[in-house]
Length: 220
Image (cartoon, rainbow, N blue to C red; front, side, top):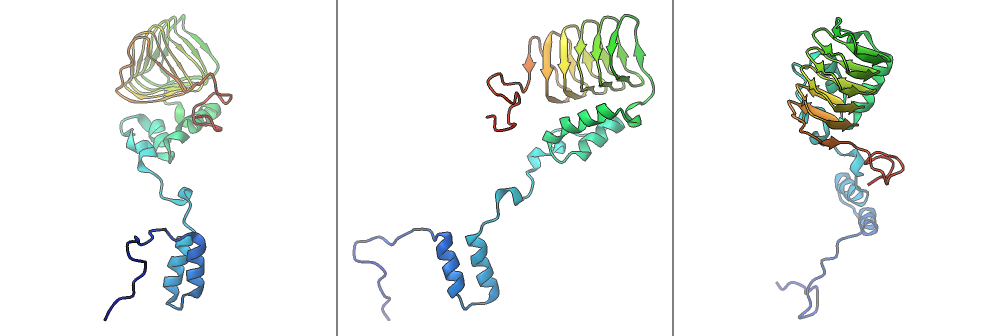
């Protein structure tokens, strides 16, 4: 039995992919089982990318282990489905100043300048000459040294060391972060046991973007 030739001699068979219109027509003409027609219709109407499963690389657990960071940071990190939700959730918690943030009372030395709601947990210390503008949370075991400006909506995690000239604003330092030299952290989330060197600058600010934040409102 000879097979019918589908193209002229010397001509390659066409590899054109079926368009969505072709698939819909094929589904309408199909007399096969319902499942076969359903597959054809699904192929003609693919699932949008937003409906796909969340990328695990966007979850906080991919970058940060919440164990040992204290009750508040553990709740914050486990309650956010994406790393892009951390700052908004943190800012909302600081604005409300919940009781779960106030774990005892740390040390604020005479000569430290505090403005607004500054929460200093047990074992934390703000030294004379430091400037902290709330709302800010300084977690247990953290030290903000003289000459360190810490600005609103920041969380200094357990065991962090903030030295002279190290400036922080609207950021989370997860735990045991060392900033012992002049540097700047703004609008950022810093993981555990990170050592920030002298004159480093980390910020999401982009001067040529109206929104001011990378990746927001159409900014590149």
